[in-house]
Length: 78
Image (cartoon, rainbow, N blue to C red; front, side):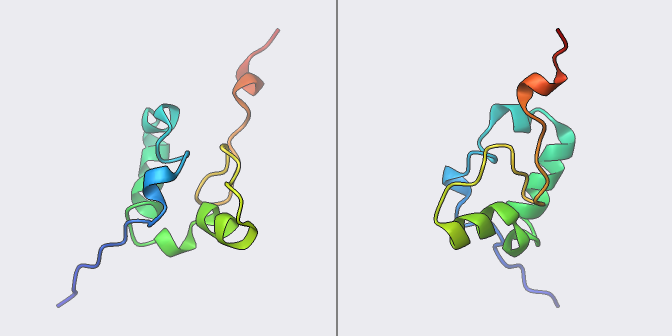
């Protein structure tokens, strides 16, 4: 029998990625949050590792899997 363990990231409350309204409205990013922020991959979160190694807040566009979101203005065309 597998014992349920709380895998919620200890940095969740202050995480700018997790708390971003833009992220919460995109299902693919919600799925990433479920896996990394509240799931079995929380120890693999690149944002968490960045904070632990550098002592600095990760860039806002850094995803838990280490990929970067394009800047908001990258989608706009003049």
